[in-house]
Structures are given as C-alpha cells and as structure tokens.
Image (cartoon, rainbow, N blue to C red; front, side):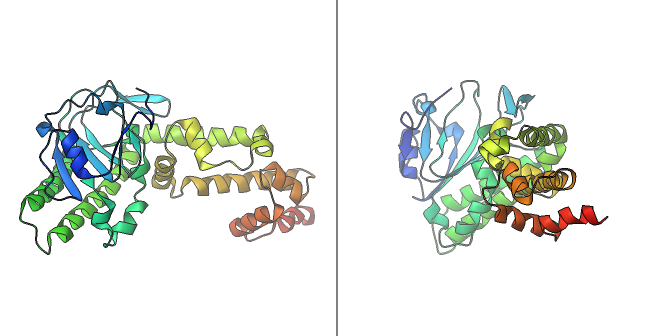
Length: 307
C-alpha cells in the first residue's frame, strides 16, 4: 500500500497515540508499552500512515505473507521485531494480517540525560526498512518478551527516583540483544546475505566497466542499496557481519583494486585514472590510495617500470 507524508497522521506525544488507539492515558508521558490485544479503536484510518515524534520498537507475534530481501522473497511466520526512529513514515501493509504483541514508544527526552540518548543513534536498525525486520528464535523471543515484561512491571509501579534509570537500562539491554540477534540473522540467512554481497560486487564491476563513474561520480552506498532494494544501514551492517567491513570500506577496496589495474596496465596518467574512477579531484584519489597501499599512485605506477 502506497502512502505519503501528507496522508499520514502525525503524533507529537505518546498520549495522542493512546487516544487514537482507544487506550487509557499512558502511565508515563514519555514512555509507554502498548499491548496490541488491548487496542479497541478502529485503526484502519491509521494504516494510511503514521509519523511518530519518538522511537517505536514493535514485537509482532505473527507476520503473514512474504518478506522481501532485495529481489528475493522468503516466508516468515514466526514474528519478530521492527524499529522506527522519530519522524519516519510508517504504514501498514494490506497483507500483514492480524498479529499480537507489543509496541514500546520512547520519547527522545526520556533518554536524553543518559548515555543511551547519544548512543541510540549508533543502532543502525532504526533506519532499516520494515522488510528488514529481526526474526527471532523461540529462545530469543523469551528474552525480548521478558525485557518488555520487566519494563511493563516497572511502569505500572509507583514512579520513584529509580524508575527512569531501570527502564532505560532495560531498553539499552533490549537494543544490545537486538544487535546480537541481527548479527545471528545475517549469518543464519547466509544464502540471502551472500546473494546480496554477490550482487553488490556485480553492480560495482558494471559501474567501473561501463565507465559510469565518469558520468555519475564515485559509487555510493545509497546507489548500491537502491539497486538492491535494501536500506543503506542494513546493507552496511550485513557487510560488516559477513566481511568485517561496512559498505563504504568495501567500495573503497574495490576502487583501489580498479585503480591498480588501470595504473599497471594502461598509459593513463594518475589524474586520468582518478577522473575515470569518479573522483572530482586527483588529490582525493591520491590520499585514499596512499592510505590503503602506503604508496602514492605515482610510486605504484613507477614500480612496474622498474621491475
């Protein structure tokens, strides 16, 4: 189902979400754990799209239909976690079906004075697409649901000096476990991941062979992610899990490989090689080349004449 920001409903407070879902006011104005089974309101209008001014972490017990990774589809019925950062447009898919579970809503102000307030931006899965959700094993589900239950119990207890610290610590633990489980997912779904890696390699090969860099400049993470139909953060995290490098580092390595090929087998000058690879300024090419090889492009090129 297609939607846009103009159709979407904007929620500036967690209280507004509770009201739209037909729920009582939240026990805390900056954090709430919503049990899907308690929702009584008709949410069909909300399915057109929603934009929250806060973080949203959802555990859904069942996803129906298929999930798309790149151009391939995989059946997942076991449910899982999805993560949305503030001000992202989200919409319900017509084939999602009914599901139970929880949604944790956390306003940035709730964690602002804690280290997590800055660290949360390092969790790349908040920028993943919905189709890149985290699918959990039974044991992993128990861990995640246990953390939700602990936060729920804390929020239902009379607020004291330690309430916020306890909930924030549980939230950070949930994010740490999610990072671990995503790493496991990249490995256990290695066939899908390796397919994306192979296709990324093919995209870069074609990019250089067809001299697209001359027209479009240096290949970017966003360009590769767009062709693969995955989010840039997901692609980089997958690369890091399987190769130890993020996508940008991988692109740089392929650039250097291509540069070595051109420097050693053609009469192109260093500046011509730089422009052919998409660099606007040869100095930038020289700097990257030396950082990767401990040689300047000129030194590398001359080494072939000396041998």
